[in-house]
Every structure is written in structure tokens, then in C-alpha cells.
Amino acid sequence: MRIPLTDNYTAPGLRSVTRRSKHAGQVRRLMALAALYDGATRTEAAAMAGVTVQIIRDWVLKLNAHGPDGLIDRHSGGETPILSGVHRQALVTAIEDGPIPAIHGVVRWRVIDLYQWLWDGYDVKVSPQTLSHALGRRHRTSRIAR
Image 1 (cartoon, rainbow, N blue to C red):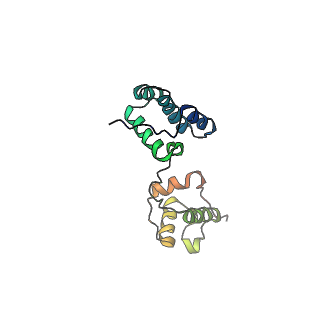
Image 2 (spheres, one colour):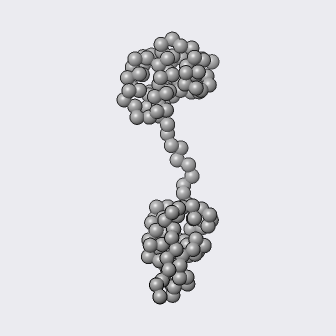
């Protein structure tokens, strides 16, 4: 079933929105829909945008429902990270301060030591690989000067 375009917009109106937009994806979508308002077929608009006719249909639905802002890419959010900002900041501080041998039982931090430190102090269980990835380039071993 063909979904009709709303009468709220015109091709020049959509093009003026594209000039003010800071989102490349939105501009591409609006230009394809402006071509529809100019009389292009959905197949032609899909070819112009490099997508399928089904995607053009989805864009028409979004424009009709939410206006031009409905065509902006949205972040899906994804899963909640295991390491919160508090955990990450505590790790950075622990790495910068270095371990205290009498308390932590090590003279330098290794990823496996930080893994155990997180579990003991915050009840956060994360794999050593994930922890290593989260630390990125910030992880440097620290040794006690003797």
C-alpha cells in the first residue's frame, strides 16, 4: 500500500530545512523526499538516495509523523555499560596513585589485579579483556621506587 506524503511540506520547504541541518543523514533523506514532492517516483528517489523503495516508505512515514526532525539519526542507547563513570574514575585514580603493597598485596597494577580490586571494592564483575579495553592507553604499570 502506498503511503501518501503529507501536505504540510513542499519541495522548496524541505530543501530550506536541509540548508540549516547539521545532520548529513537527514539532508540525504530530505533531498530524496523533496524529489518526491517534485514529482519523482519512489524508485527514482530511492536510486537518488542509494536506498531501497522500502526505506523511502519508512522515511515518508517518519516525515508524516514527526516532521523533518523525525529523519535525524538517533542513538539507540544500547546496553548499560558494566563500568559506570564512577568506576572508571576510581580506576583512573587507583592507577595514577599506584597500589599500596601492604594493603593491595602488589607492587604494580596488572589488569588482573585491577579486576580483583573492582570486585572487592565495588562488587563489579567484568572480564579482564573488557577491563583492559576500558582502560585503553591510560593503563601504565606503576612501581614503587626503592
